Length: 115
Image (cartoon, one colour):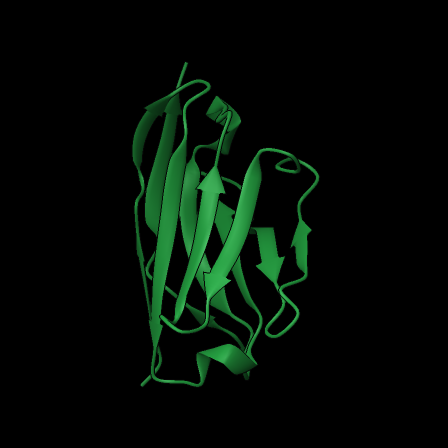
């Protein structure tokens, strides 16, 4: 059974930092691209960052380039999102995503940035 469990969300002030973690289980983690998405109230879910399975190549939404960094540890079945210089518009529920079959999702973790 595939499981993706996010942690690390919370309340942070403008300009602050948070590090999200996602623990994956139930599939061969090292074979699949992983990503982070977010959904703000009243908005569509949007992709934030993706990381390739083997090469570690990354891709970011324009809105987070230079501020967020996605990384993975294939030995630990973990994917991370380091978020710096946070802005109120980064407030959303952040979801871990595994690019396998039709896609697998975590339950989400709330990130709130206050001004």
